[in-house]
Length: 441
Image (tube, rainbow, N blue to C red; front, top):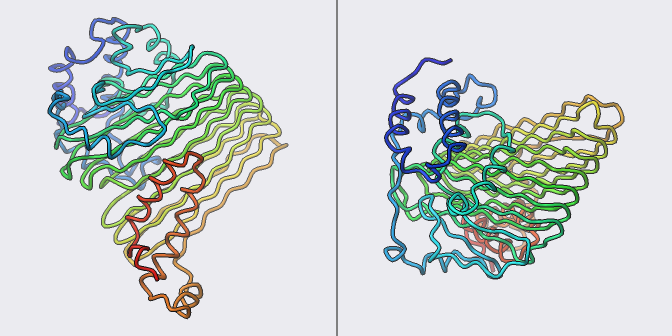
């Protein structure tokens, strides 16, 4: 066990003081889970750059900051037009403000028989056994932040689909941060029964530019032949800290599609762990990160091929401007029993300034002999020949650079199948360009 520092004492004291206010406090199994998690947090300690998995990401600013729990705001005190401006047409929408579901701001459309879409806090009141089954079945990799999330979990999205159920419209879950110096710990639980289908859009946005902390865990169970798309759009406030973990357990012939698009926060990290646990299981992981100024955005992915004939495809792109720092650490592990696995991993990075930085580490670990696997990474700057070509056609230098940068990043928006989300990501990309494209003649 690591030495108990002031930060740990603070979290222990805060937990002891506020645990009676957390959802599900009368449920013995959840209380035991929370108590075990806070003990695990103390045992693990906050990671440091000396820990291999956190070599490039220093979370000391999170450790030093004394975040508090946000107070519950009344829906009447919130401007509903803000939510309307962030809504995506053609979706069912669940809104969470400072980590708590606000039904009055949400708009859940009629669901097919066999589909349950709710908040975790509501499920703990009405059907706690459903949450218990999901949380005790999920086995996310041990981490300080997952432990904190389990101990402090306030709410989150709950989706359960029975066999053969298909949600035609995506579920848009909007997390809004409004209060400085607060921490929210939300848990998303998604269980897809055999041959079911659904798309989940998880969006994080802010109404404050002050510091706050978002710590979110998403547990996804995909049973035989099911398909889940999970798109994450991270557009936190400029001084925010964002730590996220996504775990997906994919059974035979199941398919997990992940899109992670990271734009906001001063320090942000997403860890995505996928276990292909059934023969013929598939996953597709796409990602885009665009840090500028002094932002630090980190993506860690791990795909475990545990059974034969699994397929994985992974493409991440980064655009670093100003003094922005991007990190990509992707690992694919092919276990001895996973013969006939097919895996591809690609990471491409674009540096727009002398002070921009990226650390990329693609990895393959293969223990089977009948596989098809490849990985690679590139880091470069804008092509001077392409800039010259555009300049020769009358485009000024700044606009030429903006156009080429947009062309590099926009591929990741184009890979999104849902039009409204594709347009939203495209707008976020355009907002990050050094010059608006509208100025091009």
